[in-house]
Image (cartoon, rainbow, N blue to C red; front, side, top):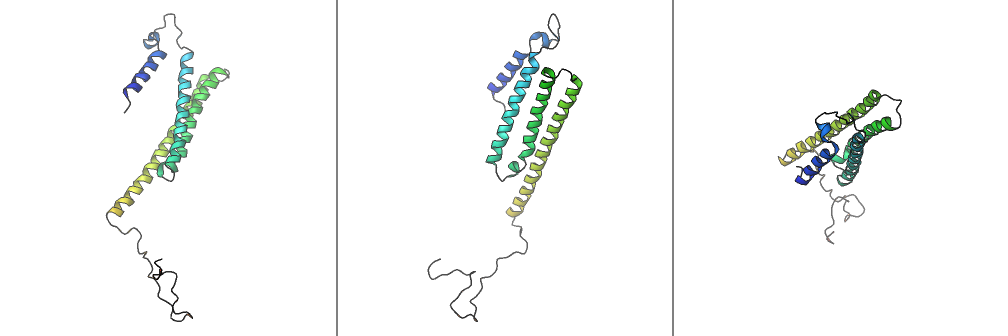
Length: 179
């Protein structure tokens, strides 16, 4: 659930970037595409990708050994693909004007598609891992025998043929000193 302050901030940012002429698709003396809007949106996208990467790495540390951390590399790669998609657009628009906009769009869209596939893979793998865990936990809670015929071996008795009849095998605890 998004807090009220966050909603206001998002709407204010959107309103600040889109003057009324753009909202009504009017071209009365205004350029059809302002040059600063893609740069601002790209910058915000890179900041969001950086925050996502930092959170993913911190989540991997917190959830070490769990299903979430085990597959977090898919999410990290997806964030890198999203950031690269923004960078492709920026580089083509600012540094490489010889490359056509559709070519850059294809590269950017391909990176976004790859990011979505990686995120889908991440969530699928985490879901299947957690589903297996929950099935095992339900079987354990119901009293099912999870380990089959594995039983603890009986403690061995002293070997009557040994030279020391007081010797006890290593499987039996000593009771004379409380250990």
